[in-house]
Structures are given as C-alpha cells and as structure tokens.
Length: 210
Image (cartoon, rainbow, N blue to C red):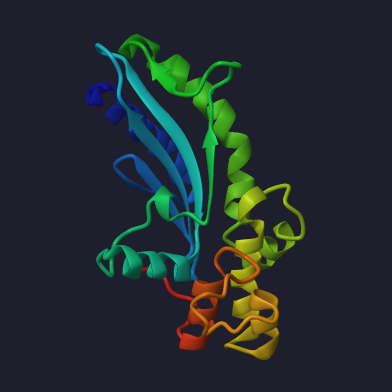
C-alpha cells in the first residue's frame, strides 16, 4: 500500500465530506450529532503488492452509550475516538464490478479515475447515513430491516431504553421477556440486551460529543 497515494486521496475525500460536516482523522471521517452519536466514513488500508494501493471503504453508525461500553470492556481511554469497529451498524461500500472487493489504485495516474468511481458509489449513500444521526429518523428506520439489516433490533433496543428513561418493567420485558436480567445466564431477546439494560439502570445520560 502506497501511503504517498492514499494520503492525498484521503485529503481529497475530506474536502468533499467537509461540506457535509465531517471531520478528518487521517483515514477516518466523523460527523457528530449533539447527542454524541457519530457516523463514520473510513478508508481502511489493505495489504498490496508492489506499488498498488488497496483499501476498503467502510461506513458506520456509532451510538454514544455503545462507544462508552466499548471503551470500558476493551480498556480504551475515556476520550478514545470511535472507529468503524465500534459501529453498532457497519456497511462496506464495494467498487463496481461483480468480482471487486477492494478499491485499488494501480498507480498515481489512476487516482482521479478511482476517486470519481468512489464518489459515485458514496455520494448517494450520504443522505441516508446522515439521517441516522437524528433519533426520530432512526426510530423510523428501525421499523423494518431494509436499512440497518442485522443491527435493526439492537438499535431499536437502545432507542427503547432512551425512551424508557430508566430500567422500567416495560423495558425489562422487551429486553428479557420472562428472564431475570440479574441472572448471568439470561440471554435476552436481542444480542445487546445486557449492555442496554445496564446502561438504563445506570442512570447515565445518553452522551455528548467528546
């Protein structure tokens, strides 16, 4: 991977994303909400032969309480900025072509061509990505799996806890059914039932931008 190619490519992408309020952190671009949630666009470098430059283009939604949970369980600093790995939802934007998985810039002379192709794939997705920062819009999105897919139930669970305003009986039933959330063997009705319940019981605010 040629950093001499990907660096200028990333700076050019930031100029485009800055118009939408994104901030650059090398190859990661973040747009924050007042509540402390973030959507991310990331160029993830990949190993490549010779002077080729390869990378993945990843998108992510990071919810503020999930980021705090990740910081605690992973031993990260309290001010650690989110990466796509912290996303409750992620999406890889692949280049056009049936057999294409990595974005590839064979030589610096191809950078403009690849940037235009990437922008053509990314630009239509940005309005929907930014929509996820509005909790009212996010609730609408969780009514079916069309947008968030596998993450829909977990996102809906976090929003339900936000609405509940605490560890209420209704939230407990939604997350655990007849199970006791204090039972370490309780599996819950959704994958993130336990961290959601623990956050609701903690009384912590949703969060604010670090």
